Length: 214
Image 1 (tube, rainbow, N blue to C red):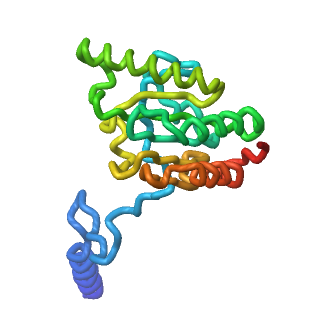
Image 2 (image 1 turned 135 degrees about the vertical axis):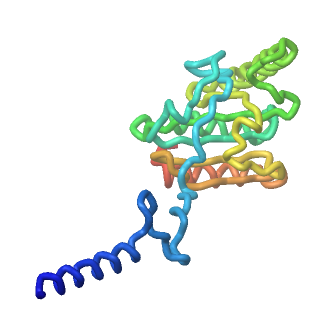
């Protein structure tokens, strides 16, 4: 009699546990107030892209400079068009000098020009390819006039860097990063991109990226 009572009790316990368990192949539902996923880290770079390198070791090729520099400190500059008017040359010369005079900082820098009249940088059409090459010559000449040794000049389209969510209201966006994380951003409309802004950018490069020697 005790055997039958124990067996009956065991069956009842199994039924209760089975009713509480989730169906096979399914997990229990998360609490309603539990987050569905971790929040994105806004300090991380948005990702890689492959601009057309007008100058530098990969001149004439589509090459990702973020991948090249990796975890080392970088200054990325996105410019709304391909106009190298003041004070852009001053900023590029100062960055070039900072790289030259601070070799242990392992600083890298590149500029990505995003001309609106060049929507297909890859040159799928012959006329687009000709336009890219013509503009590349202009940018390369400007880089030569500035005697840049380290800062790489590039061409790209807004579509290729869409993940960076650049505002059309800004002429220049300067991104300081280290170990693939953003440490500071200067998003500047034309009215605010001046000599004072250049000095602030260079101060941040010295303070946050280690290029202290002038």
